[in-house]
Length: 122
Image (tube, rainbow, N blue to C red; front, top):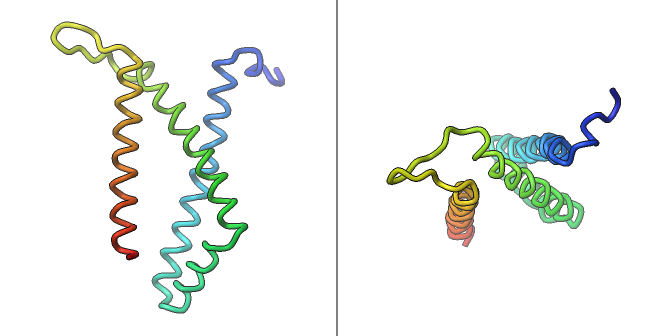
């Protein structure tokens, strides 16, 4: 029974997808700590911001970015398998259109959020 999922590439991808959820949780914890530090006052908040600028933190965030991007990619790939078929003008929308639409929406939302944060920080 050990490693049964390793025999099928679909299950391997699924298990890696599920493992990357731990990176999503780790980033949520990082943000939660930042929120707690913000509530503790300016000194605590500034300390947290400085910690986020350290080389170790930057490497950690790059690893999180890669893992979360993979998590998102595999999540969007699952969309066509988990949702009812979308029909437009009597034709079923192709799975690759569903996946690319999800990616496009995520990229636009991320860029908009980045723009907001950039503007606030400036």
